[in-house]
Amino acid sequence: MVRHRQRGGRHRPDPPAHLRRDRSVAGTSGGRGTTAAGPGPPSSHARASSFRLSTPRSNVWNMEMAGGAAAPDQADDRLVGSDRVLAVLKELAGHPDGVTLDELTRAIGSPKPTVHRALRSLRRAGLAAQDARGHYLLGDEFLRMAFAHHEARPEHVRIRPVLEALAGRFGETAHYAVLDGREVVYRAKVDPPTGAARLTSTIGGRNPAHATGVGKLLLAHQLTTRDAVDAWVGDTPLERRTAHTVVTAAALHRSLELIRERGYALDEEENEAGVGCLALAVYALSPSVPSGALSVSALTYRTPLSTLVAAVDEVRAVLGPLGEAGSRT
Image 1 (cartoon, rainbow, N blue to C red):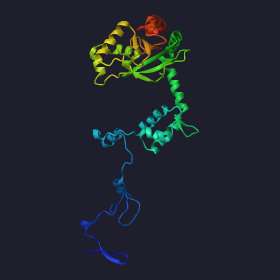
Image 2: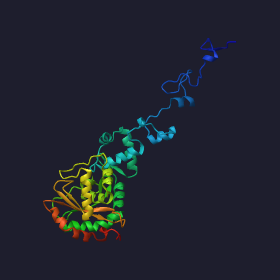
Image 3: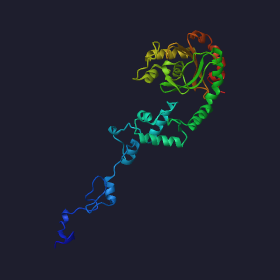
Image 4: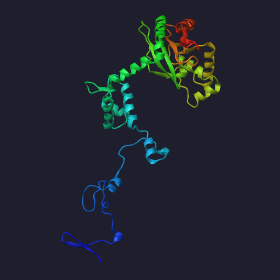
């Protein structure tokens, strides 16, 4: 028997059972979960059916949710989550006078509300601040932590008196640097007490290892064979910073052999024209492996490289036990 249902004063037969749909999900449109009987709260089934991710997630998140590895073509190079916050923090470090929200948005390549949320998180932690002009800059808490960490580094504390003595003796800049992959990072720097012309190097700054005295000195301890040099150079061309820069594996190998023979390294205007360096190993943390290298970097018109080479024994004497393998104190 066909049953009838009254609606609006008219009788309408129900459709046959095989043509009926579940009214809890029928009529959904635009993910809002409306039903054939009119608008109303969506059912749990409708909510699940219409759910979509509104923001990109990291590949790690996708792998965890999918229970497998993400396909190579699914890689997303857009910044997400904590990566975005760190990108904002790094960008702030490049603007000591402050930067606007619009400028940050363009530099980071993320939507303005997203960058603003990252800034809000950094400000809550004291890692970012906003000045009277509305510009954003690194916060005092970030600077306090950075300087406290830098001052507490053992090698920095122990090497600074040596740098001060050498800068005073030669009237030139003294550096302490460590090797980081294919680059050197300057951990400490002391400028001469007098002289109008000074180097633009900064603590935390980087230079190609193959083009610097400190870099070649440290590479000489690591790359002791031609095969090791070839593997380190690989398929990546060595950057030519000046006409004097070593840019082939063969030339670098010969340079490192000479450094091991001499016990010191030279930068003969290889990184910057008009600047020469004498570099020696520093054993601040280990008696057998250099923790870094020290250099006296001089403007060649003021202090020729030959002057530094002639005084290498004096530099060694100032460095003392810190410059001697096996005598860590």
